[in-house]
Length: 460
Image (tube, rainbow, N blue to C red; front, side, top):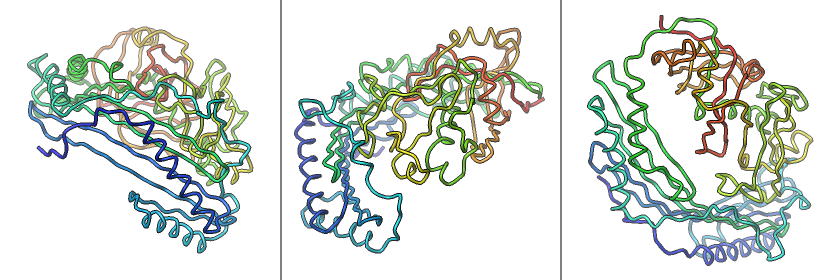
C-alpha cells in the first residue's frame, strides 16, 4: 500500500483562491505587454483530489494530489510562443514570460494564430461575474471514509454470488478544480468544479471460463452518486451475465449499442467534424455541412448551460461565448466543431468549441433497453467494444465486441470474441432508434442506439 497524504481539505477557500489566480493572471499579462507582445493569454489552475483503490479486501493505494499550473502564450504578430510553470515565485514567473517570448521570436509566422476575435468574447453579468452551473460540490472526504466506501463496494459484489472468485478492485475518488483564463482583450473568466466517482470491477469463474465486468458512478455532487453497495452488486450482476458465452453465426444483423457504448458513435462523429481533422483533410466528413447524415428524426444539440452538466460553461477555452445550438438537426449536419485556429485555417468562424463540446443531448425516439431488445427481434446487443479499428479518413469501422445474442426479442446468451464492421456513414444513415435509457455519466447524453444492419463476424 502506498500512502501519500490523508485527505482532501475540508475548507472552501475557492473564492479567495480564484481572486488570487485572477490577480496573478493580470500581472502576467502586464509582463507580456511590457515585453512587447502584441497579444497574450494566461491560464492558471489549481487542483486537489483524493483517490483510493482496494482489491480483495485490502487497501492498495491511497493518494492525495494537489497540483498547480500556469501557462503563458504570447503572440508577436503571427508568431506564437508558449511556456508554463508550477512555481509562483516572481523570478520563475518572469522567466516563464521570457521563455514564451523567446520561443515566439524564433517561430515561423502562422496567419491562423492569435487570440479569438475580441467581439466574440463572453460578457459577464451586471455583477461582473459569469454564471455558475451548480458544478461546485466539494466532498469533505477523508482517507478512512474513502477506504471504507471502496471496501463496502467491493464486498457487496464479491459476497453476492459464490461464482465471483476474484476482483480487479474498487475505487473511490474525489477532486476539485479552480481555473482562470485571461487574455489581452480584457477577458477574465474564472471557473470552479468538482468531480466524484465510485467504481468496481469483478471476475467470475476460473481458468479459460473467467469473465470480467464492472460498474461505476460519477457525479459533480457526492449526493448524486449511486450507493457504493449498489455499485458493487451491479458490477456482480454484469459479470455473472457474461458467464458461459456461446457461439453466434456470422452474418449481417441489427446491432444495438448499449447506452454507455453508444456514445462512442457520437465520439466518432465529433472527431470527424472537428477543426483539426478537417483542415488536415483527415476526415471522412469533409465538406459535409448541410448534408443529411442521419435519419430525418435524428438530432444532436449542444447545451452549454445545463445545471450540473459535466461540461457546462459560459465560455470556451479561448474566452469565446458559448451558445446552445444544434450540431445535427433533422438528420442534417448543421456545423463543424471549431476553435479559432482551426476556423481560420478553414476560412470559417469559431463555434465556441475550443477545448471541446459543452454537453450534447441526443433526442430519444424509443423506450428503454428492454423495449429496444424486444423490438429488434434478432440481432446483437453490444455491451463492450475493444480495439481502435476506425479509419478517420474513410469512415471504415471494425472493432472487437462482446455482448448478447438476441432471438425473438429476448436475450439468449452472452457472446464474446466477435467483430462488428461497417462504414460510419452507412451506420449513421442506418440508425433506426435511440433509446430513452440515457446514460447520464458523461457530457454526451444518449440512450442505446440501434443500427439496422452491420456485418458481424461470429465465433461459429
